[in-house]
Image (cartoon, rainbow, N blue to C red):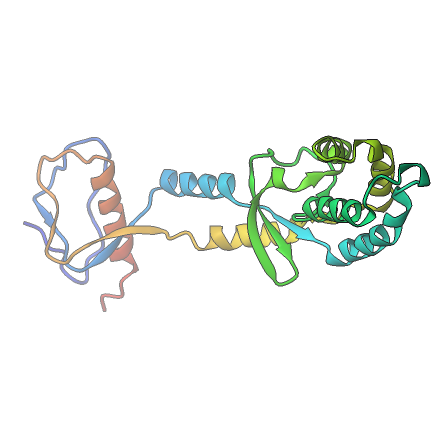
Length: 231
């Protein structure tokens, strides 16, 4: 049975996937188990893969678009279509506008897949949404078509289309700085260790194969032992 005496350097060779040639080895003190390079890489890759990018909702652009939109609503009802209730038509187009800008309007880009979860920042507030929930500028025509076709105002489609194309603006933008900052914070917070070996517990028996788990415990012990000031 080996306990490490103070004042000695770690003098055991550690060979993975071979029998431990020394006597049973016990921990002289509590120490943390270091993660392997493979474990750390896998954890980093997983964080990068699943990290949610930041998009910013520009509220000034939205407010200006809404103001302009509201001002032009009166122009969508020509005199020849007096059968429509102006109040209800206005309610319909306003709701269609508000639904469009619930998460904003963005340019069409292939930066991330549409099913990617992103973080949408509206001023001090943030929320997680699917990227596909933020309408693309190129989808505007299809969006209006679908809304009008499911309404009583099909005869007004051209007027409504013109109203939207004239008064809507892209107001959601990818924020590379925030995305990188939050990703780096997550990567910096990765723990270098996993679990603990308690003082007095057996690390490995003589003749036992040094498998991946035993190997990490041994190299962690070596690192901890050689970092100690035994004087």
